[in-house]
Amino acid sequence: MKSNNLLVLLPVYYLFTVTYVLTGVFYLDYAKDTPFNMYELVSEKAILKSSYYYILASLSFYLGCSLFKQNKIETFLSRSRQLDIPYQKLIVFICFLTFIIFVSSYGFEPLLHREGYISQYHDRNKIGLIVFYIIAPISFVLIPFLRRRITKYIVYTILFMMLMSSSSRFLVMLPFLYIVGSYLRYGYFKLFTSLFHLMIVVFGLIFILQIRYYTYQGLIPNINSFFSKGIDPDYLFTGLNYAFSFSLMGTAYVIENIPFDFNGFLIGINPMPSRYLNISYMLQVQEMLPTAPISAISLLSQSGVVLTSLFYFLSAYIFSFIFSRMKGETLLYYVVAGLFIIFMLFSIQYNIRGLTRFLYISIFIFLMHKFVFKYKFVFRR
Image 1: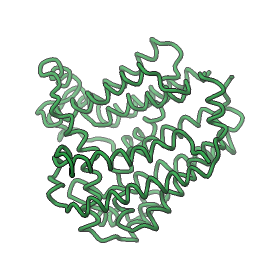
Image 2: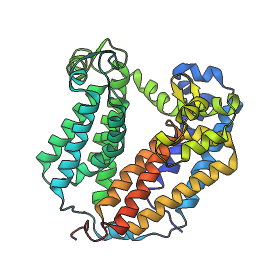
Image 3: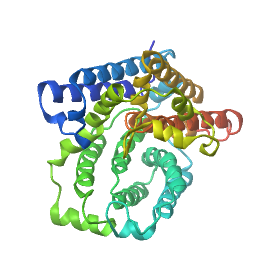
Image 4: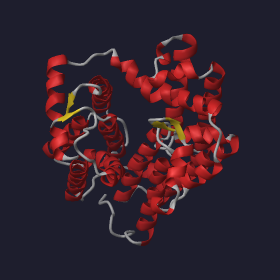
């Protein structure tokens, strides 16, 4: 029994997190420097316990996606080393729509120049930003499918500058998802493309953390900072620890100090719109620190072995089912692939409601493909 190649990334991601943190805590010291001094707030026993839940989650997910044999998606990829999407204008339109939604939601003026990480003088459209975070993975994954190289470079550069203007860590998602999209198109990882974009991920993360607390930010100040101050490699472990150490130690802190609230959990996984739910209650009981909510993996670890195993098993089963039924011959498959990558990356930092949103959107897209667009979005092979 073999699981889908793409879905295996989640267990690998979780096991890498555990290896990175345990090595940096028990054998070296690099993982102890965490935001909010989280290492000082947890015991080493709790760190080991949270590592156990990460491993349990990865095994449960692997088991869930292993129920499907090597499916038609993988057969299709191995049969044709290069996929070609005929809807080139549609891809450009999706990328352009992503840009418009982000700029209009964030604000053009604060993106150019503002005081502080988040401007106190400009309001952001939160609903618009939520929509952006949903469609951005889709556009990022589709960029490698653009045939014309100049179009591809222009679209990539515009989106990169847009994200850099916001000083957001989401910047690194563009090169990372570009690698994923390249793999989906060619059926293998192109060495130069992968190494180049991994370098962008590393240096992008360092630069964003370096400028996070600068007085003036935005496109113009950030470009000026890059050329005047360069990149400080000391921020590398700061960024990695924020992504990995803080996530796993946050789980340890939650297990040790915060009781599990089942009602809050039910609200979090409820697919109904927030206006019909007691979201304020959920946010209250799922707050780890004043500016840090309880992540999805932390909340599930709170609940114990059964809910953790069940959630990851079912999530893997659903994604595997969707991928296998879409057969790799529909544009919407790549949309779901992008959503899965975000699901994987956000699962250790975002709350359960934000995470399940990507799962439910994937289900909706599958149903839309099944009943509405089944014969419309077909690749020319």
